Length: 300
Image (cartoon, rainbow, N blue to C red; front, side, top):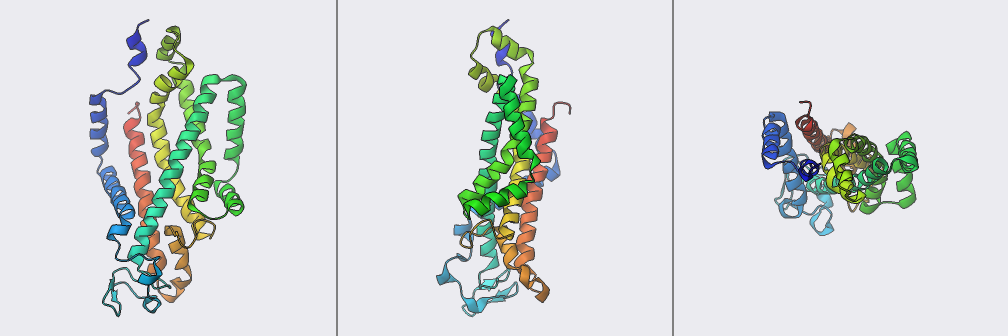
């Protein structure tokens, strides 16, 4: 047995990465989705710099400007290109700040769930035996409950807040990563390069993190993309129900809820516009995940 046998699969060649990027960019829909998602990220995280006003600074909001239609002009000469809500806040500014909160919650919860779930899945696959049985029964128990129900119960107990909703989303998402990573790690653990690494008497942690984990990354990346979209959707649902973020840190879901009562009066922009933005973010992330799955699938 030779050392190259164990190290050949630890990192993809630069040419392979370039080929993956080329194949990813060959799909027009995926490129468009990437542009849309990056655009929303720039708009959301750059909201304090590009928003016409801070919609949550009472010194910049005039209640006399409430419920103005898109394109209306205030008495001070400011044009509300997307109208205002019931509190007189500029909808364009409110959506930019809402995009930032939604992306922070979705990306943070997805990353934390990825780390925790991957750790559990790797340990279960590598240790086998009773450790695998216990961990997978916990995963089965977690997956048996509706995600929205578990999140609602946790937020009722913990209360509102960005950190609390991120914690709730991590709790309802980590089991998906654990189950997926365990399955992939079991397949990788039976391959020749792992047996060769064991034959060289490499430590278990080194085999786990240096050989098995890198080969699980493509699958983990695809699942993470899908779970980020799910996290953004769940956060919007919880905020719409009034159990997500506080009014001082509103996301797109809370903006939709604020305009729900005005739909029948014809003031559609308060709910519809944030809803369209939320839909565009979720669709773009799902399209990126679908394309990554196709590109990273060795059978294709």
